Amino acid sequence: MIVNDSRIHRHNGAGIGFRYWASAIRLSGVRLIVRLLDSASSTGDYARSADVYVSSDAAGWTKVASVRASGQQIELASFPTQTARYLKVVNTGSSGNWWSIAEIGVYHRTDPDPDPDPGAPLVRDSWSATASNESPWPNDALGHILDGDTSSRYSSGTGQYDGMWIQVDMALPQTFSKVELDSGSSRDDYARNADIYVSSDGTSWTKVASVVGDGQPVQGASFPAQTARYIKVVNTGSAGNWWSIAEFNVYR
Image (tube, rainbow, N blue to C red; front, side, top):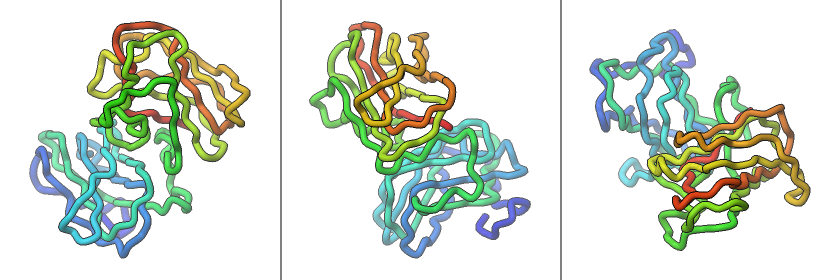
């Protein structure tokens, strides 16, 4: 899986089980931003879901991201830049399929992805967020929408109302055509309705799409490609539920 030949793959020889993990990989202290698993020709043998950990000594591990099972053989996880020597991927799902990995790639944040996945979200390194309302509880912190972990979340701390908003600063202008909000395990805390705005300066805003509150925890809106630095999502509905977002992703 590290020979740069996707025709060769490594598999575990058994069905995928909860907490099965790929061998730790020695990294020589590189900075990490994107983690990729490619099952190549073994298209059904992708990880059903997994957590990504890094370590400097292979003893103390820090979780930095989760991999979501999309049914695709190439799986990506982005996270804030880390400096580490070891990387471990722990499967958190289960399946009768073996777990097969043809290629494993780790990317420096300043290097372009040599084989970008057109369906993958933009890398969110250095992004930041602000909001009109924030819960006082640390577990509901706004930064959770950009941490790559669907088990954490941001929550508004108050019921939804017309005009409630979140804003994301992508640090640099980006070109994109889709925004996705995932309320994670807080399935009922989706935006009842919302409008999506973009801006180059954080002052002048252009509405590009609307999100419909359809009862689903994952809400996406596609629109003609925009180049902007800021995205604002403004709630236009109301509900007694808080507004919770586990992950905020943007796509090309």
